[in-house]
Length: 462
Ligand code: IFM
Image (cartoon, rainbow, N blue to C red; front, side):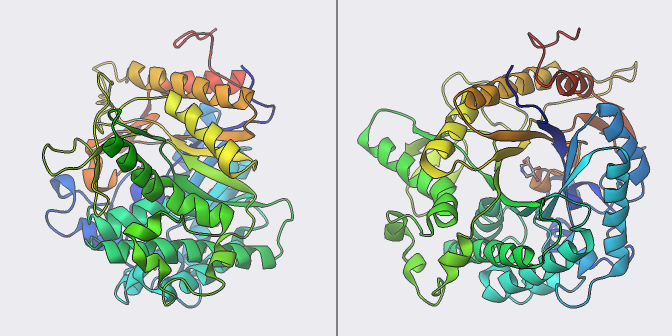
């Protein structure tokens, strides 16, 4: 295997998905508190009120990370812990929690990687329009500056946003994520303001000084796209979905412009009241790295109104995703296509950037359970990760500057609209007792980290 020396093998998690303690130490309400407490929004009425109780079990979880041999841990800061109302002076107790977390990581020689925004927008900002308003981008930059001031001496890796596509299109377009709006116009405003928030925050961090070794990037969820059938209609649908899912984010970040073809479907992008002069310059400020979350490829068909989508519908684009023929799927119903990761990394390298890349998330949910002996045998996850590590390694051999790989996720956790029904963890969580059980994949991953790459074949451990 040819993963470079010092490759940052890690695991990732996000505040609302694991912390719990939603009413403690001055934390304010986030859109996900509101959404998950709204009947019918989350499967089984699950909420993040307790989640993995990570807030109270910090030391135990840090020890777990150490036992796994993690070199890095990616976590997010809950904005409403720092600014309960989304503005103003920071809440010291909120900052203290993350200082303790960072300190604990450093004591265990685990590199901290901070995500500033992983979807828990303060409800007070949503009440004023949330990401549909420009003001939220400005508030985000202020908040980012406060967190950076507190942690820039001890955290070397900074990610502004996690998956702005999901925030914008699932939160403001499809309404299946908080805050639950179903309006394409709002999704477009949110897209632009999220990207602007990223650009303004990046500017703030750059001018704040801090450790010159610190690195700042953004994390996008990206998917290679291919037509379902060899037809003009499907090819066209695939191009549009690629525009929405990938280029709508990559082009402004790396080329300083929205993709020309997207103006045909989203004329709001040409509205000077939304995209103001200077915005695209701010959005395309140079980054230090790109974070990539890869879960799936999109196989796309033209949506003629007949026949159902087996995956996503793209409103206004007359396109839908379908399951590729014969593909195995995870518990999320997502097709397992590791070669899509190689394809994605090579495309980024060839078409967009030679910057260092981190896989900031990749992993899978399976129907895991603890057997009577108290172990969790998740061979499917091992096979999944093994294949994806190899796919990433292929891209490295072809010249991609890949610096790290964060498995999603450290612990089973609150999987948003799916609640606790989907288990992504390397570590099993028995929610009734909060007992943690490292799955077989966790033991296997420790060996991967030790060897700097997966063993010869999945399961081989010597
Ligand atoms: O759980 C999520 C995470 O919060 C963001 N990326 C995808 C994961 C799996 O759906």
